Length: 288
Length: 102
Image (cartoon, rainbow over all chains, first blue to last red; front, side, top):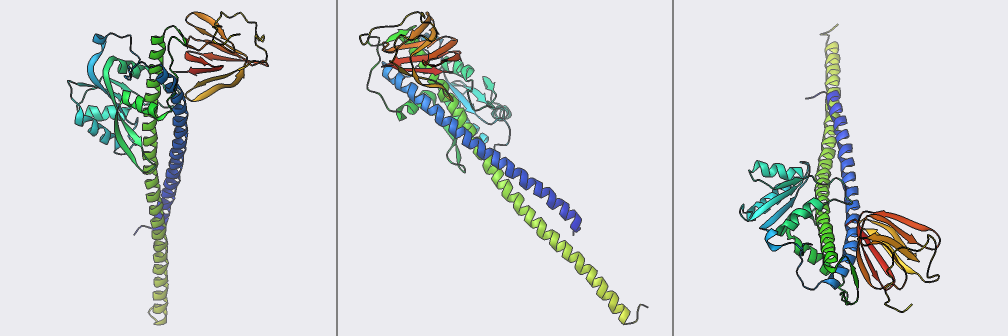
């Protein structure tokens, strides 16, 4: 059995771990609240933009802000964007995400863009090549998604694989077609009755430029929000992991404390036994 | 001034001066994560591809892509100056919305 001093040192180290996991748990929880707020703000902005766009549209197709791009300039493939964590502390959700993506991946029909270092490593380990890797943005505001949008505009269609935040304890992998994502977001907002045309509006520089700009803007917001959603899920996953670690560390600390008390008691009992034995020997005259 | 008459002019208004005293419009200038201005104003100045322009109350319905500039919102008391990189301006029924950073 370990000595009480040794156990006491271990208990103290475990106490530090309990405090640390508690701090990480708190940080993750705070970040979740912050990102939720950002998503809410961006949604309001998107809804207002969509209101104008839906008044302007002449057809139902979403053209990714490339109405003036020639058809033959568009790559006839589906672009896959996968949003993963930057580091490795994200549990198994990234593996799950890549597994889901690879189920439908066809080298001839798809190109891949990876956001997040962990995803890039996972793909490399599986021998799957990707077109481009982007770091997962550190900040939660004004995420610059312009380079990603440039790629999106080059391809016929785009699907995004991301981690969806369902609740603090539940996160799941989701695949969404990007233009459908924009339209689904727009359908949530109220559709205005007025129609915006060149007959009742002045456009500068032109209607097409304005529509393209609106489509690009909404794509920006949609992609930013998918990144934020993924970050939210990652923080929730981290929160869950920290919560479990905190609980385990707390239990281990209690166990160590119990062990410490037992070791101390056993030491005392040992000493007491020695004293009693000693006294017995004195009484019996064995020791003088 | 009759409803619907186009008032888009090159910027000629002196700072602080208002062509429509007592007549105001609502101006909101915001980005996805921040609101820069939300309130009444007498006029707003910005720059687009054609050049500098002002929006006054009763302006015709108007949509334009903004160039990098300082947007000036004249409230009648003090002018708000908001530097921007790009944006889109929507003017309708004395309501001006500027969407930034997109």
